[in-house]
Image (cartoon, rainbow, N blue to C red; front, side):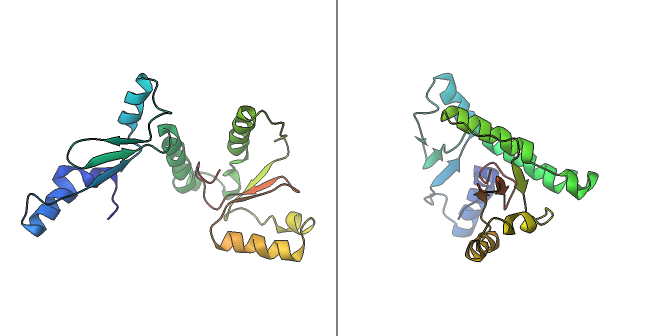
Length: 173
């Protein structure tokens, strides 16, 4: 069973399992994901890039697969998309600048040269980019693109410098 962090606390899911089983010695393995506190504890020791799995007492582990700001940024994007959207016109919710900044950081780290000046970012709620796409792709490529969209996939089309994000999250960016 997979649950959020707070559900794994002793007073929540574990207490409920003990009540159901009638056994306080029930064996439970708890795997936490990306604990901010543990990440920053490792960062103080300059080990945040060296340690991926931490083991604690009583069958508790933590997998550190991404830094905390990835979760924070994804949450902000979620809030913008779901709560701030009612304050904006639908066309005002544009992540092109944000995605372009992510691209700039990546290409800088990789020592690449990429021009983001004409980058466009689309999502399922965007106006249709098909007019622009259809000018540069073949019908078979169009079928592949439609399949990617149907399967909730994000993708990049270099011929039109366009990114389609199936969801606004850091992972999809």
